[in-house]
Image (cartoon, rainbow, N blue to C red):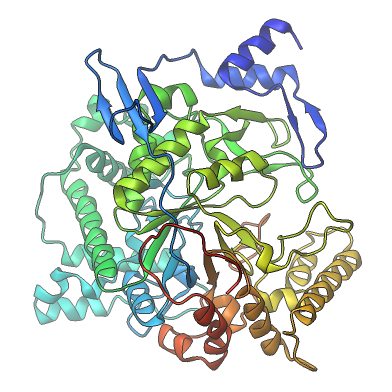
Length: 599
């Protein structure tokens, strides 16, 4: 590679080579490096310094210095998390007699209040763009700074209780019919119409960031959900056409929706002892509100993804625009701070999806396939430090999703800061031993959140039956179906051996008995947090999301087979969670010191 280009790339944090999943060196093509540098633009200087607390630093926090610079002092380590058991919830999948075709904040409140769990992890509940079709994936929100009004319980708003009987009847008549799969467009259309009937029409003062978001929503209703296709004068939030828009009523309406979300999320937290942990996606929809409002801090034409590996031989394209490292630093990391703060405003903890993205992200330049990208590095000490600082200020725990091909240095840095890593039964192996056997749960990391599966993997029952292979084969997503079935059977047999070695394998077990046994195996984990999902506990075959598909599979649309009330009373659920309850009695605060061995 040209030495000058290599030096420039190194100075800007752009990788000219990387180590792939097989630990082999891969050289990045010169034209890819040039394309990434072009998208970064000229460097922007920063007046912010981020340091870790020490004997020579001011107290932890944000400090404006006399010379105009900002000093951010971050905590060396967060307090240890109290051991607890809990749930990983896909909120949309919950349902009760009063929810309108989708799980809502009230369903979440009741589930959390009644479950007896110490921790409840919730899928991202961040804002959509209010235009049809509604984006279904919670991991591609319009904004990571605001909440999703699709999850509002319309009938639990103050306005619903105050209106006259005729209006209440009109609102109730809008409830969408039940469907086998969640119909986001129908749900949003019904709730929007109901909320418009209830809106008191009051224009209240709002902070600038809320005004920007509400303005985006109002314009999107008129001009469509992709700001890149709006009339040119509307494509930036600071233009005269936007500032002087005549959509004041709709702006006020969308700001009011956020206040309703705020009220219901606050009520949820106030009425449960469980610690609520909200999930933070890697990025945002490139056509959405944050990409419009924060376009000067993002690389809007770049897509984030992953390089080729054994599972995705052409790489992955997540279609999410990344932060520009220099621009983010030049703002004192305020957009990043705002995102973390907005999540923790209604939570006792935050789970950071793909936490390795605080260290580096795979940038795919415009017009290129996913395998023609490269890594761009961030100031990991600053990013992880600010994450820890915001958690410290909120008294919150932090969990990082570090599954897949993640450098060991990432997990080591997380643990050094008191950030929990993620352990999944399917993946925890002794990678240094011949054949890479499953690692006994008692030997899993203590500083971790442990589970059997995740929303992107087969459910427990699905794993036992090879359901994910069947679905992928039917969709034509596997080349060698027989080989895939054989590998799935081998993985199942391996798990049965692990159960037998732990004395947990019943004689001639049914699938329901094996689901319970795998939960008992999880309960022997050394990890601080032990979580299961309703899908796992109730024996659901279908996984919430099938990576590599969009409309071929009903991603993010599958409701639970039972209601909230039925779920918690289900004998299968009670049997599956009994060992977790015994191993990790609920705890709601932080303590110092290690957990010790398995429970």
